[in-house]
Image (cartoon, rainbow, N blue to C red; front, side):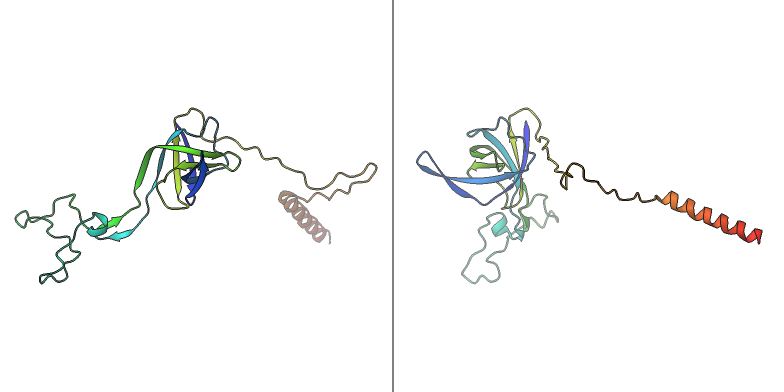
Length: 197
């Protein structure tokens, strides 16, 4: 299983075989290994869902809410009963208000619509978990490393000197040890001079 990591980009459309496909572009890292990755290949996509902060039971659990009429007041979005008073406690796992979103979600069987190998962009057919700009992990049923080494060509600074031209070499800077040794020698010479006087 090969793991590819990238950032989710804004959804767009591509035209393929006379029809428009809704795709989610994923910008992979420069070291991503795309060898063997082809269009039409199914992937497993994992990412963090959109965070909604603290949400009530209406939004978080799709509760219906209380009655809207017949003398009801301050009860339109209330959660209702949370347990029996005889138990004197709330059962663990009760659906209540709280943090909503930012959960790890995995989509299976998402197919690749198109690949831009030059820009390291993979077009996924359909949606992908998470918001735009968030990291997404792609798992392909392939062997081999997830990343490859990218060779960077270093270019030497400066031009070659013409034939016969003399090259000026900058004098070598003395090291810290040499500086301290010179200072000690100067102090010893001063002490000798004073003793001779």
